[in-house]
Image (cartoon, rainbow, N blue to C red; front, top):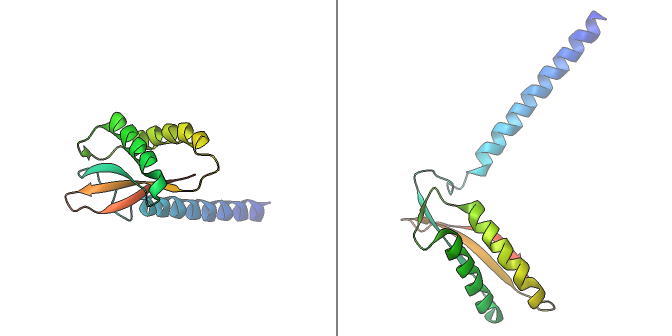
Length: 123
């Protein structure tokens, strides 16, 4: 019985060590690209390469502006932007049914202009 308890304790310790490593690794992966800095300013735009979807991209830009404004935001506002764009997408998608295209939401860091795709919306 003592060996069983020692074995279970050892297994639990190994599981805990692996879990901590995985959680720490996830934290590091989340910000590897440096686009979540607390002291940096960010802005958001939509991008569309399909000519037919320029109007859709404009509507996404409008949703972004209503949610976070025009000026770059200290630390960013990814959640607000995604929420506004998800709502815009839910309204547009039924209207564009049967057509194919994509609108990307980009996060831009200031002043260096580094870009990151925040989310893709496919029609």
